[in-house]
Image 1 (cartoon, rainbow, N blue to C red):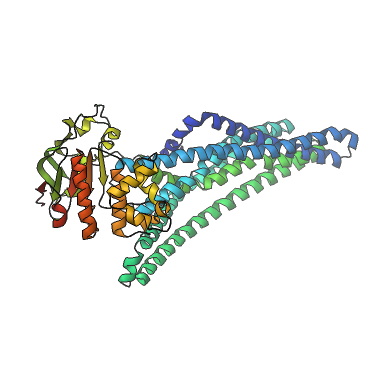
Image 2 (cartoon, rainbow, N blue to C red):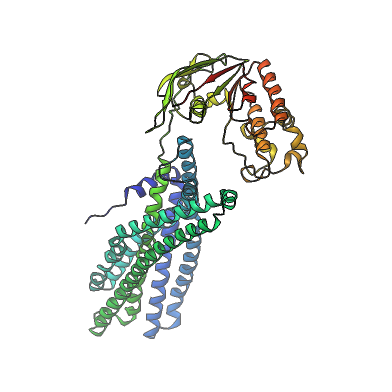
Length: 549
């Protein structure tokens, strides 16, 4: 059966094209290290053979110096190989991880079917890191596996052709050993990767839902669920370990058989006077040493199933299709008038969400979208930000269809405070600066003041330098909302979208924020509110009701 490198591994070799210089240095280092190691072993065996037949020290001095040089070269070569191959591997892994993030960003706000956030996090970290075996070891091992056995074969043939002929079948057998089990290894590795992904996702979800689990007294049941996932993973790992052990035993047996077979034949040739006795140690050492790079390659190939399973998961994220095409080349519109014109939208496999929605939001106006849950209010926000595309109709800003604008240009026109806001585990000031990292501290304070956040921020232990904690855990829901609003205000975009952004504000703060909205209107900015509360809707000049299904 003809074997070739699996398609997913060939796809992962594509980034190597951009690292040709690092690749060349890594391959050269591997060749130097492997060649010098073989030379050192061969010279040492030759010296032993010469000493056994009584050759004097004077005749061996040159060989001893050559051995010292070969050992030094081999040591430096191994160091160089490790440095060069890992520099290549880490550069390529960085490329992969950035590609994974780009894939997730392209598909936002959707997710890869069947994958939870913890599972995707494991792919972006553990699976991508596993590619180190492919990039740092397999590429270099291929060079040694080609050059060193060929050199060993030539030297054995120079000693005696019969030795080379006897040794030759062991080389392909050593390479074929892990490949015979490659399909089984790939299936086992895929099952193990899925089990690991489920466990990671359960751990992440359990950590995020500690309060809910405690409130409903379900910590014990969740621990049982994670214990079951852990046992399932352990079972998969035992299967992998059993197969890997069998492969290792087969590799060791082939190495031993090759050395024993060549040693036996060489001894017969010496007894027959067809091989010099001084060359017997050299023949035995060459038989084993020339196969060593193939054994290393086989060791790496043992992990081919793991690498292949991880490669499939990595490529699934790398190939995430964009939900919207960023092909717009139009100029930025002159006005910020927002128009929804007969917009229709539905999620795949679901009922229609928007049916012919039309409204116009003028500069200096505040318009609210209201309606029951599931009516499509947040979908309107996603459509405006071009996280989704309408099925029919058009959305325009200043008369320009959003599809004619580059995404970067659209982001400079619209700032949004999402319903599910996220704060990073950095300072309050840096969270506000998210959209404008270069903003001065005075600008940050001004935005926070407009968002009615300056008072509570200055009361924090470190003021604007206070850490927000993971997902803003150090702050209340209302405080997080005000920081998110300040973040959007700092962008100074002509259109501001507040998606349920006042739902956790107390009455006094919401009233003060209403004054901020009035100030934004006076400055000519358009405000789009998504709200349920009647107190929030009072801030709007008009309300568009979405009836829902």
